[in-house]
Length: 182
Image (cartoon, rainbow, N blue to C red; front, side, top):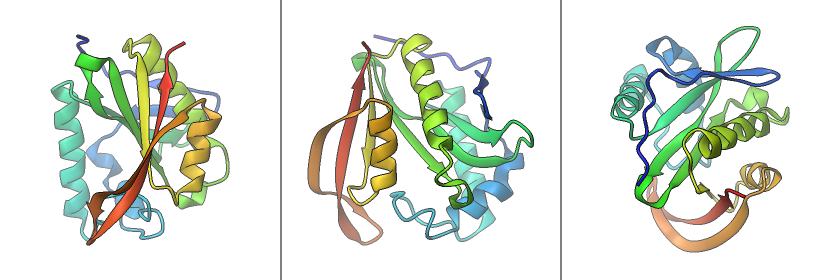
């Protein structure tokens, strides 16, 4: 079984991005994303109504990080260090050498290849630093942009579940994508 240690926090740099630790100073940027119904359209969580919703989320992210149960990064552009998205291993299965990646991006940055760049770096970290055997992505079948990001990064659709999750008052279908370390 794998064991994870995320201290010190691994900052990842790509050509355009810095993936850094999420902090309480990101509350305003994260609230802007999580309170936007269009950004949250495919995220199976309630839309944030108050800054306290985001403060609690950040505290949960930091607690799970300190307990080495999951890791999430703030996606920032190199030139300004402002959170424009998040990405991370939201569920870890150390006994199966598997992690589930989750991500979201401010709609102001859609269509620029940012998520593909961030995901590529997080995949590399998962396989080469965490020693994962496989990485999973779970998406709404309606979220073609997210499915396309996963496919561009080499993920293969493994499953389609009808009405698998109860989200915001209705049952939702999900697709599961997987990437195996080669």
